[in-house]
Image 1: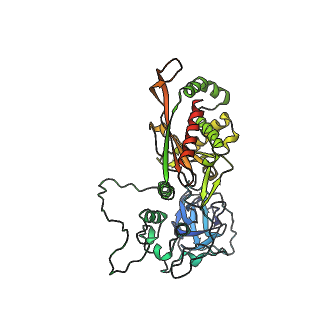
Image 2: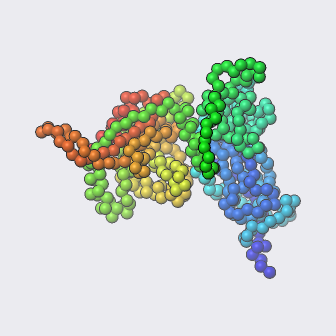
Image 3: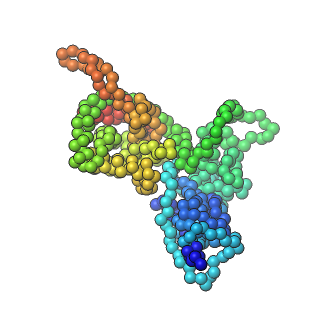
Length: 456
């Protein structure tokens, strides 16, 4: 008899830690039923928090014996949410009625080492826990004592995830208004993309209209666009998060973009002359990215207000300079690893971190800590041959820089002895900035200073 497939042990499956400030989560959906087998890496359960919705993968192959909580239950971090049976062989099936024996020798484990898929935060604002007075109660996902407000249920009994409730609270959307928003999630559950689309459309259902009355105010027209025919491609989870983040950024921030042109000839010549020796001496390739980061860091030190974010009506000028670099993944999605404290690092250190984070991004090995805490972002659109770009601000930052392709052109060079035409390596820089925080003079001065540092 082969004992390999018989070897198994029952383990308490606990709700893993999902962020520094997260203390509880809401079970949104179980993807594996009781008695059903699963393989290592399969998604067992979807959990919602007030920041993001998370997919929790299985840490090993086995069978789900018993669920301790059901969909819509609020669970503290570290609580046991299910009992699993780990199998050393292939996944084995069992009956739904199978329960763990109280007298069996069960091995428990905290099982907190879970790999989360990279997702961008939408918003993380402080909650005061109070509902609005009167008949139109404002959404308040958590009271001051830490208990869920009606466990995420509106007046109609509809269930809303903590993330949807937090977004609704930020925009002062009542439960009654939430109930009028078209939902596209499973079991008619309202998703964050639904609520952001609704906000982008101008909140057409903000006020209930009597059925017999004529529509008043702005109504979103049903234009019935012809979207054409073709192969449907479902957005993956990261692409949905990116889409939500971009729409949110354009909605909350009045974007303005400024442009300058930089003569990169001296920098290009210096890099071509030194990159071989730099790699031999440090073991690192010298790309343009660490040079861009170094120039941006110096300019931020000259204009620190660029390195800020907005908290209601208060501008927070950041103490640290943490530069994010937008990086394309093999899947076509985008992620922004962050280099911390760039003002404290020399070119060699910056090159080493840039190369390390870029390699991790390509291999999908970035940690959560390596993608958060950014205060300013650089997007090198020139990598793909683009002349220039108009980047969308990476919330909650105040600005983002796009660097275009470095291209040789004939330029008029002014000299004391007279003007000459020379072949120069030129590059466009574009800065998108939040006009609530940054005005044109500051943005233009900052952008010009970056170009000056690159030309020097």
